[in-house]
Image (tube, rainbow, N blue to C red):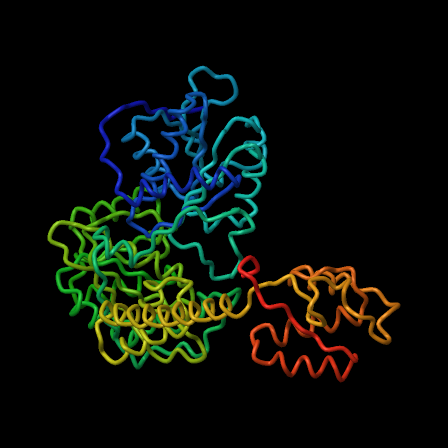
Length: 521
């Protein structure tokens, strides 16, 4: 058994303002909920934020222990490196690495655990009260049974989920796991604040791309069908040549769908830029081969790195300034994750260029840059306005800025309209303790009307009467008349004369509402 234990206490950089706001919001959310969600765009410091949360809980009680869950080696390494930066002791629970548990004196403040290791007998070996807090990195995955089993095992612990993309392609809501969302910091706000660099888009039309026959399963395009549609040499050349031209000297990450597509495209791209500038990384490679490719790209030995799912989450290389989406998708979350690999700030870096490739998409509405930037909750008309402007050749940042301005104008018009309605209601509908049938202030003074006895008011009628400020101890027909009057005439005081005559014709009694007094107004 190997124990990975790290203790150090170096200086760490101060948090950005939005990170401090997020920390405060998380603690407020825990006052009411067991579990809460932190949504922060890629590159805006999710890891440092949740490490600060851990530090504050530990400062309040040194005996508190925390479990950080992640599903990939890169995320585990990133979490442990940040813990070291904050001077925390960390143990790793993954593969052959085992953390101390129970009453062990040498156990650390934090355990960083692999989701795939924390299951079955290995999970049950942990005391259920071992952790005071469980943090789920990339928590859009927390719907899976593996995650939920871990959270159920440590049922007494608070839970924090962190993600850049809370929306899922399968439309399964994270509300099934998290009680609330404590804080959101979206990509457009981060760009506006100077935390991330601006995004620029180039869309390349490829006549050879035809996705009309690609099937959809569980909200996702079929990988096998995409591979068949996008690995023909004609298609790959039609993508590679313009990419080589528009990318220029930029460090570029290329996202593709399958391993075969990755290696085929890397070979074709090498024809246009030189094979020595292109490398491939995929999940089937050995750790050493993957590390060699990533190190070569980081050290600028390679300009292009073609990957299949490896760099979508948890990869951090600020030098990347071009993202090539050779990966058609219906998932806004996946597209946003990919763009996030290129939006970090770096010296000499002005923006992130996103190159996507369009063709015949058939019945599919593929996600584009504007969808990723606007977020999952953007109104359809807002999204369509941006898409149209971009399609007409307008810069995406200008298109979003103009659409935002139009949205603010619409929201302001709606606010003013609602204010006018509010003032009208306030001035024309003041609840009064009066009787519409008589000048008396109580229904007890109302003269008897024929045929009003017998049946009692229903519970629903009583609720309507009470809500409108009327007594509920009246008979059914009187209650029906009062409710009808209240609904129809409460905003139309000028119609009271008609109501008087109607009451006279129907009941033989003229109603005379009280004039409001200063007290009733």
